[in-house]
Length: 136
Image 1: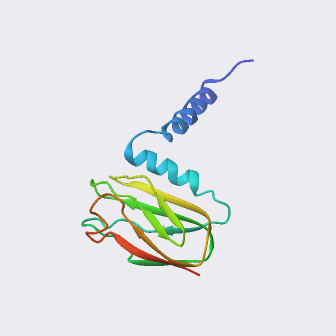
Image 2: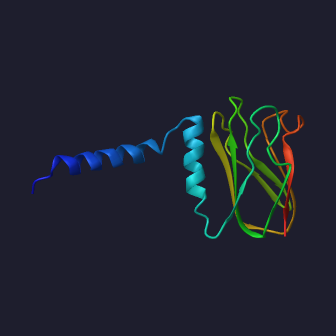
Image 3: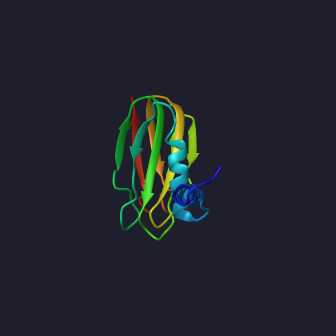
């Protein structure tokens, strides 16, 4: 069986693209984690991005329906930040990312209630990196 060059090039290009998704650096690792946990069946996806400058998120409050929830937090800054969630028996932390990386939290069955999302890097929550997630 003979393989033609165009087919071989396509296979090599696809293999390189797939290998690139599993990087071990800050922003590419965050993006890989993002796509991996975004597959939680029927999840409500919430975007809580870090502000372009300063110690804050773009949104100070968000809402979601009870059930599966995935929270993405893209960080455009060179300073590392994450997204963490606390309340109602939940205490989760995403990966610390920078330079366009995405910190992700996935919850299979988030219960109704009020939660605090924040950056768990020491001093960042106290500086203002926090908000409220209300789940109904």
